[in-house]
Length: 259
Image 1 (cartoon, rainbow, N blue to C red):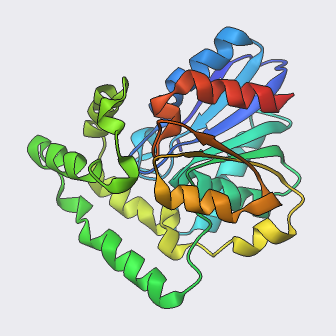
Image 2 (cartoon, rainbow, N blue to C red):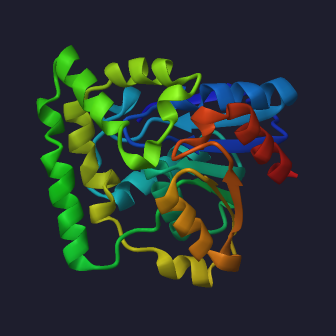
């Protein structure tokens, strides 16, 4: 598992852990982390490449539980405590699982455009079938990667993302990925294999911050459904990937909630 650390390693004021989304890696958080460190160099930011992605393409745990245990081991090797665990989309689901398994380990759980799993078994099967239909193991050439990415970011939840300043740089980072490794990594990262965690929101005492883009109707609806279970913040003029659209705003929200 590839783990990258930025900022103060010896005696940090705050420790933040970042988990990226599907097709991403540590580099996706670079602009947010830079803004944070510019305002407070004493922060430690730990960013982890999830299975099949970036520097973790050869890291392929069998289950989500093994993945979470390995992530926790990597965190404990670098920090005594964690002030904020931040997860985007797929990374948000994994962050929620970590909070369930290790409830005392994180002062704040920050979820960006994240769902809480699929309760219905038949719907989970349909989700798995859809993921398999992506045929990522066949996306191997430059042209096939570019075609897949262009189609992926035309999905309605990403509306307007192509106008974002960092969009082209993000697309080039995606071109670096090993799509077959990402497909293999779905054994531990797919929502089809993860438990539904709706109950977690009703029972937990965890401090939760939920960030979503107001142009992303699906996740705006999820945010509305959370009620008082989380502190909910919507980002105007953003869709699914808020931290890409406005990294300075996103970093500012994190800084405000670190205390």
